Length: 229
Image 1 (cartoon, one colour):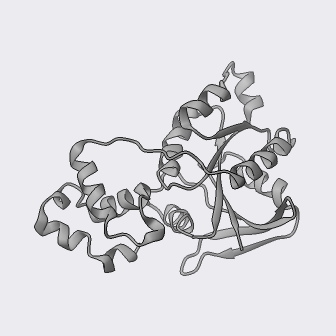
Image 2 (cartoon, helix red, strand yellow):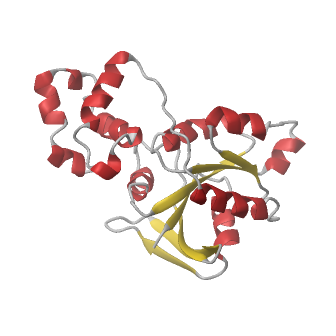
Image 3 (spheres, one colour):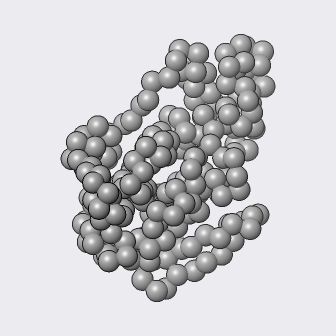
């Protein structure tokens, strides 16, 4: 089944958005091999059925916890048609770190700035059109508890599923870029150019710098190791 995945930092109202999309028929289960709870539900867009997945709240896709590992693993699913990042409008700085990591997966992405009413009360105004242009993705505002903006979010989900998203590429220094290019050649086809996976593997093994030498790179980019994500 085609999938829509919700991702976000902890305490941003992600589960409320999830419930608004899926209704009351939701299944909660442990992600295989872990104690982490994953919620799944069903939603329909233009008569097409999608599985909606609510991932644990995370601060990074480079895993330092079981929750982050599970979310990163879920994003490797070949059936994903779009990712919704639910964010706290009051904390854009924290939001955008995760946004960049999600963009580097190459998956279609929507940024949902939730709690925009609370941001407004604090005098925070975000130009979503300008932010959308900078990031190259759709940006919407919601208030999850009142469902304000949810109809627009649903329209945006369908539009994102139906259209190809422009490629996003953050330029790193030459040493890291060289390592990324080399590692990319060893990835299976469906993960080609997924810079998030490459960087995750690099940090996990603590070898992104030494990977630029031929000897260490052979060890680092062994295809068997790359499948063990």
